[in-house]
Length: 81
Image (cartoon, rainbow, N blue to C red; front, top):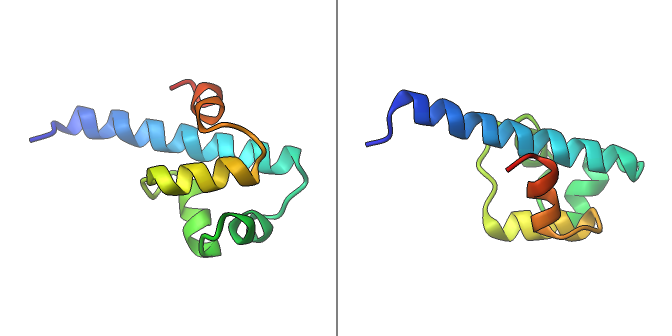
């Protein structure tokens, strides 16, 4: 079983990843809808990812990274993970 402090730690990771995705998206001048379209992800799901409300699967991390023209490892590094 995962303790509540571990859950909080994971929530912080998700928020950091989401904030990094949003930052990179804005640097490229993309709307959230355009990033979602390029990533083959529903726009509402993309919004939840950016807010750190959804866990990002490896496949979606790769899709988002490709749409942002970066490697998944760069995305994680910029998120401080």
